[in-house]
Image (cartoon, rainbow over all chains, first blue to last red; front, side, top):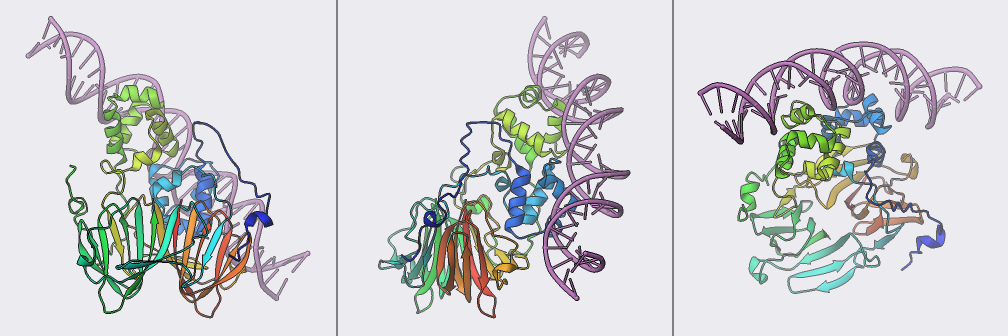
Length: 208
Length: 208
DNA sequence: AACATAAGTTTCCAAAAGGAAACTTTATCC
DNA sequence: GGATAAAGTTTCCTTTTGGAAACTTATGTT
């Protein structure tokens, strides 16, 4: 489409390819924490308020002058709303350098079935970690499907328009209206139906 | 154990309204550590040798009399040959089997900054592959940010309301209106600003 | 430029963690 | 059961962390 490839503009984008074998991870927690804080656009003071740790303590952790206690890390994870494991995630290699794909409203790839009508998004990019698409929900009841839908990975779903019933194998059906969302394990049988007369419109994103 | 349905595991899955967002995870690290040590059939003395931590220290950690430092946890993970996230994983179900989390409109965890206002979704589930949240974009120009936002993983973004400018390091800025979406490598510097008078509302999902 | 203000760092001290050894409990002989 | 050895806990003390405030470095603003 209209998007030029980044390489053309910045051909020498340097991606550090750290190919160290199995070493004792230094695990730059401090650096990592700083990244996270910055990515939220927080100052030390703001982070301090959210986590309940002193400004000075955060500074020292970030600069690796001290090693936070478990309790401190709990406060960090809690206050900054990241999973604790995320704090430990080793600095990942960047495989996909500077890519993006824009999909204009109504321009996705259609993919109609009797119950859904999928509009795949960001189809220009392959090998993505996530697969986003919008769907128009035609189904009106459980019976419109043969069986549970079930596949690998996790799924996130947000209602864009209308109102749906979200059925799932291990739970009671739930009613979701515009703006509501669900996150679930897609191996668990699931299924959607529009509640109202109109078709419902939803966005969902899968990752496996 | 295997035919336990999620209801048993998550009996009080509150669909209606999960109010108390102020729960600091208990995360019985001590108990967990003891389990791991026992599962290897190690005594405190042996574990001490493997980890380099004193017998007494291990005992105190297991009995939650002290909270280990990050360094201590590295030694633990290293000596016992488990990765750190595993130390935090709940004892039984390690992966997200048959789980789900519903977030009602406007009920996410607020996370305001001067430029964004994040509403985190599905916060009940940890260790997710994706992290979804809605944001109100306050920023009106590039200058409202100090620098590019940049972090690990990939990001998907959909405009729910309003109109935004999507700036990114290697491309020209793009205008996105309601229904438009972008998928991009989050390591590439990026940044958003609302175009119109009103704040814009977007959904985004990150995966790393 | 000088000034004012905010962000980040360092200092100093109270509080908590880590280690050596003493102590208590549990298991294993006879 | 009593003696013995091993496993685990507690005590005591040193080292390190965490917080308040002082200090230094950036970022405006006039």
